Length: 228
Image 1 (cartoon, rainbow, N blue to C red):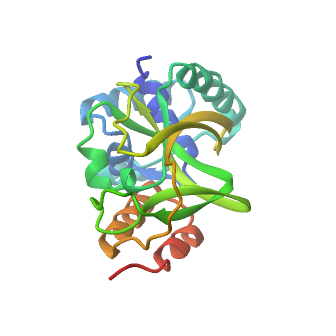
Image 2 (cartoon, rainbow, N blue to C red; image 1 turned 180 degrees about the vertical axis):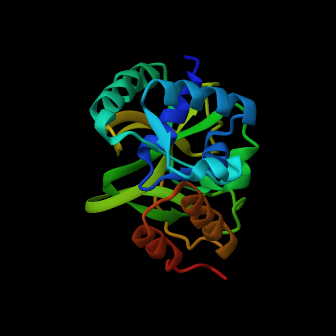
Image 3 (cartoon, rainbow, N blue to C red; image 1 turned 135 degrees about the vertical axis):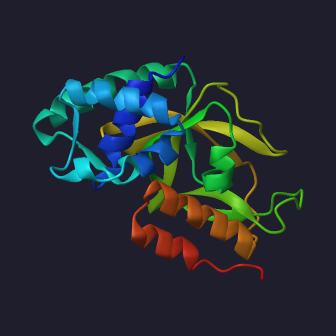
């Protein structure tokens, strides 16, 4: 199912904790400047987003935008109404591991960030991938009654993610800015703990910072032991 650009931009702005600069919205949405300007123009005319008074004098990249609080329920209903349709087409994917790396995200065609998501009842583990390709353990999910894993909900136009050996698809309930959605993700079938490499962990943390994950969660991930 094709992703509407206006919906994409609205998701990125609505789900953020604070107002976002035009440049940040551009980076997270992966749209072209003209595409983003057009989408934001439509949303502004519709009363869904606005910028701060006085920001008009700033360069476009530095202007800050936020969703209109008075219309928050209408905005949330609009987004929540579309997410099940996208999920039903297997277009939504919960990324919690190396797919978060900003450079990998930017270079992946047909993949767009919609919002952050929190998976309750699991915790992040690192396990032996049996291939050695990661130079250490790879990100995985393990059941935990009081655990939570933060990730990015992507819209993937291809509807398919290439799976590594031993990796399987799953469907999980993820909590986002406008409610809970059932999305696809992937895990490794086995659990044989192996610390990740420092570089692998740093890529995940960089992705979490890029998408605005909670600082407490990022500190926890950063503090995990590595093999080097």
